[in-house]
Image 1 (cartoon, one colour):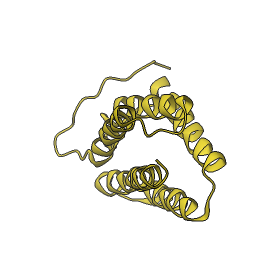
Image 2 (spheres, helix red, strand yellow; image 1 turned 90 degrees about the vertical axis):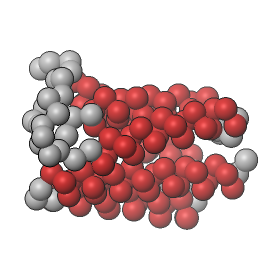
Image 3 (cartoon, helix red, strand yellow; image 1 turned 180 degrees about the vertical axis):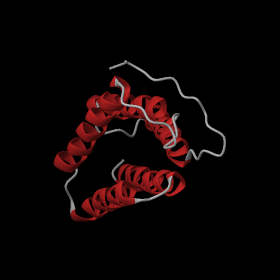
Image 4 (cartoon, one colour; image 1 turned 180 degrees about the horizontal axis):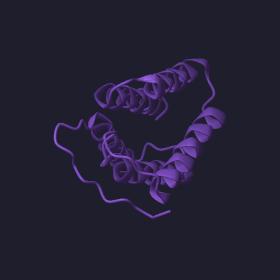
Length: 139
């Protein structure tokens, strides 16, 4: 297994999930500079997940890859999700997290790559919206 499979950027590919991955990095920077993060662990996980996600999602769903970066991204994304569930387990928060899971399940059953990327970006977007709403309410 390779550590990282370089993207080939196929013509007519869709990168919706890449754009939302980049958004995670900007949100992490915003929290850092505004000093509105709950703990250093939260911020470290958010930065790690955003950077890994960018490297992972720069490859489209048209490409087949099974490298270490993909698996590391999955491990850190799930770790971040568990962190959110255990430390921010209020009822409205769970709505956003389970909405993200719902769209992620849709991603698995989508037939074409455009739809897969779109639904995966919606799962990212649910987490991004939740992060912004929750941390602004609890400054």
